[in-house]
Image 1 (cartoon, rainbow, N blue to C red):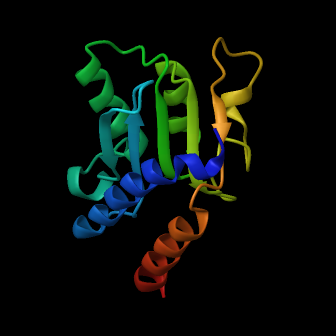
Image 2: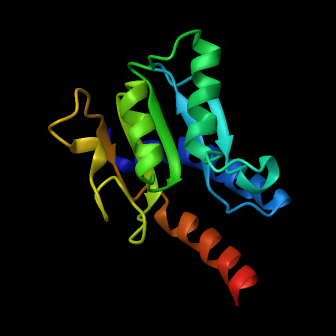
Length: 153
């Protein structure tokens, strides 16, 4: 599949990211798709809303998918997220055994799927998901830049 093929799934993740704005959370969203494209889990950042330092969109979506599937192994699934996962979320993707990680914007400050670190492709780990990057990156970047301009500017 090409990056363009992942655009519909990324739009779902972007909708989750926009919903995070309602609770003043950083607008990052994620979805987990089964091998046949069914949405198994959705997530958005909830660190502010839930007072949870692990409340990242990816973790929320992976937990929901595992619950829906009835097991923690998400083999054959795809994690789609608007921003390159951090070390915690990249580790969660590896540990959940997702087949691939698809993300939008690169995160030069904390990205762990190639930008700053490359957790998911570390040969020392027992699972290495495929990576597809840059899907609707402009939309993801714009959403984040607008949020931070309003909250830090």
